[in-house]
Length: 554
Image (cartoon, rainbow, N blue to C red):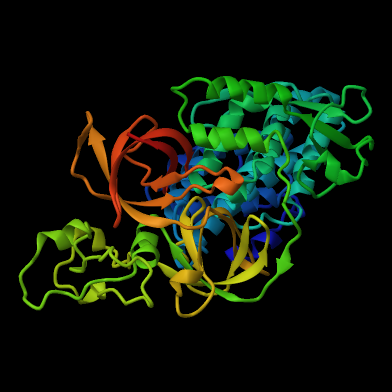
């Protein structure tokens, strides 16, 4: 199966036949020896062996005790191999291509086969009252592996398989019908085994979906999922019509849909198969964590609290467009190509000037930027880094630091754009990156807009899709020197100044590299007009690619 066909992943359970003389030996002793002989250091070979073994095991009828013991024995090896595969395709440029695509598909298929094994066990155990503890484990494990498929789909910004939510919802419905949803089991799929319940895993899956994962960076998606291990228990699931039905979200256990806002269901949340998700207590718990100054990932948690609380509203309806747009990605590239486009010609002699390299720490070019005319009549091409005879360590992958990509406008709203990438090449776009958009072929600096990538998603029909939120207009390039103990450090860094807009009460702010700045820091800000020392008073955002601050002039 290709990654492009992820939405068509086969979630149907295989037909089982009686085991024959050539069937996979599922006795505990044979399974243990087979697993001990796996070449786990060879990820590719181990993946092939495990995948083939699980396919054979899922295709035969074996006693429930035997099936459960077999799947439990396979768990450490499956988690080891999938973790190794993830290191090969996560944090790679998107959409995934070549081997990266193959690794992602292999990891997803392993989780699917493990989930299928436990779902077969659920099917065989239903109606057997004496086997309820075993059924609890089977339901819990099946949900955990399906959650890994959903999580990985989000982290590579792919559409999850059709039927995945139907399967997830049905498994929880079985647990709920048998009063097993709050029974605790030991979760051996975690790096450190811990007690968990079916309802906690189900709520973890629901809340991950409600966190708008396609708007998060890969690391933030994983952070949200792991954080919910502890926080999901604070939320509550109510049956519709039970009286206590407070909650912003609802999910239908018979549908193939993720949870959504109750207000979007047109009041149809009284169905007996509908559950209401109440996040009030969980929001209070997150708020307590945010009040702790030592809380890591403060900005991410703050955005997650908003996602699990109030529903954002668009300012006005979208208007379809079909126009090409140039996208310049990253603070550094925007600083060089959009805000300060005029580049001095290289010196005639061959001597090396220190000032050139101060402005290009990668040592890939020997050009300098003239800030005297920020908005020149045209963009001049920078010296091709491949032509330089002096290449630094940062050029090891031969990547061009000036990232200009061609996208297409899908639609527009008051706050931003939806863009489509219809190229066969990979894109440098990442959630949280700063971008400049220019809507013509000449890169006219008078017609560009500054924004932030808030959402990414890949589907076979539309390709890679970006949601870009626009920032304040009138930005200009600056140089910033961090101050150490009130003294200019001499470290020159690129930054962008967003000026004040008094008419709508928008304060001036600075866009700076994520490090080394923080709230309370002092810095010297220099542009073509003047130099000021400022104090960073409030951090508005830190996406990992840049940070935005309010400031006061000292």
